[in-house]
Length: 399
Image (cartoon, rainbow, N blue to C red; front, side, top):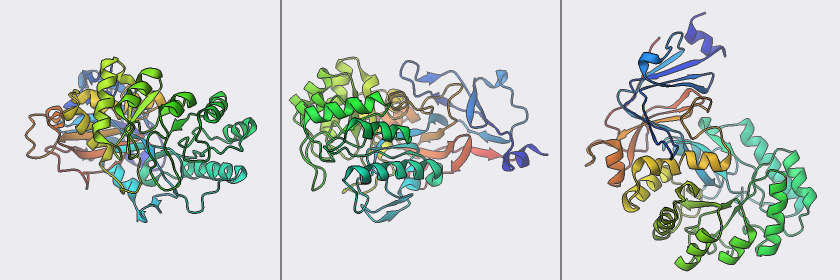
């Protein structure tokens, strides 16, 4: 059977990407790799290096990168999904597909809080979380990996509830503070139960985002001790700088900066992380869909904003949206290295950007142009319909 027919029939698959101009690894300790060729077999990276050392035989898919840069798929650490690719918050279809066109290949739910009639009783909230986890495990909108099923905790919950959730496959808590638990001691007890059973936690930080939510200040954040400080730059309203500093210095947890937050506070947080030599703690999200809508280019915009205004090399800014999040969230994607999932974004500088190169254009504040997105070794998106047009685009080579 021909190799391409074998792949279509579900047989072994081998993706060869050649003629790559720049490989950005997503790992802060080594953000630029000495490579021009990547091979993925059956959805996982099997080779990263130079063409002369690569076994390119028996490929089922060949992509000529045409000198483009290759990055890991971008990760949105903070979304609020509900049902497939529909959001009732804005009554919009296709928001996840639009994010795919912005280079996002993985999303992390911070709670399915926009579900109409969201149950707040313990039996109901557990049922919703388990259902959401199952739904998005079984269905990937446009191929995007959505890690969902994130219950918002309520005061009536007991330790057994967290064990039940973990036994059912739930691995995330929704934002602490969006449910009925809004005080530090109760949150800390429940976060500890979640951690005991392998469930990762996030907390709402700052002023209320929608009616029904409330202020979560530094005292509650530090007392709760969640794994991730959700939207430390506010969602939308940020805490005072003094409180942001206390949070950054008072714990060693993840510092999540989001698009739908206070941009000045985002830059302040980045500056603190740099001062503390703890950039590895910074991860990026959009906090969408939300009242401000859907932001298909939200992660790319955060990368450009933090690089250009935060004086951060572009190759490191990309790490905040890829490898940092992958490591913190314990994902098998987000870094280009052998053994990880073959999730890639092909980028180049936007046409007519003032930047000389992709990295230079990002550091000037321009969005990159996206020419192709690959998930698990399969092409999911050709030239983006949402980014400015890339100067160069990759091409699939007929076999």
